[in-house]
Length: 230
Image 1: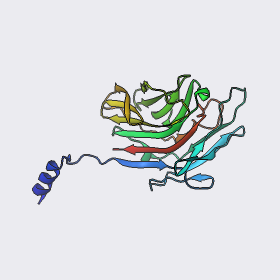
Image 2 (image 1 turned 30 degrees about the vertical axis):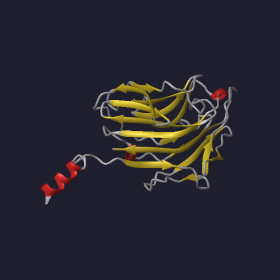
Image 3 (image 1 turned 90 degrees about the horizontal axis):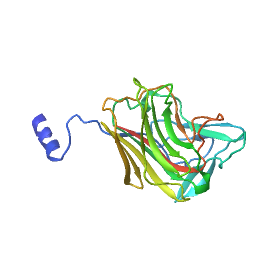
Image 4 (image 1 turned 90 degrees about the vertical axis):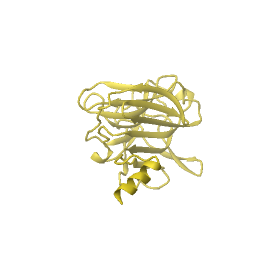
């Protein structure tokens, strides 16, 4: 029987013992209230943290809602807000394959030196995975930082997303390959150590690192944020 199952799996193109990818967190922002529910079913609900009057608001996207963050601000004191989960090991991929992404809306005039879409961990004090939108050109990039040997591994998209239209951005790590996709088109690729591991006790954070001044605030709208491991 075991041999028969093995043969069936091989004939179907399946790898015996290969990890099954699991969407460990997903947020479509179609709920209500101060808590953003995790639609994956794993319970990684988000709370709103804010400073200096920072708020998020729901905006229409397709048949549902997206969440809009504070507008671009160049004052000495600006509103800050982020959505954060509790820190949990479930969201750490270790050395396993990893994919994460979001639907992104950002106006051309709303770019800055760096705006965080989704991240877990910090580049200088712990390991990290992150999706951000960089610079005046509004090019998204994906970042990984190893838990054992700090140093940023980045892949940047050749295409901008800061044009006032919705774009679907995805970061994908498979072994030693690290890719970024925009609207399902490969826009960048780099190599990383196959043993690179991400594991930390930091929260998953969406729209910024936190609610403090230097939080790399996102200044557009986000929808369908997700993390998949395996």
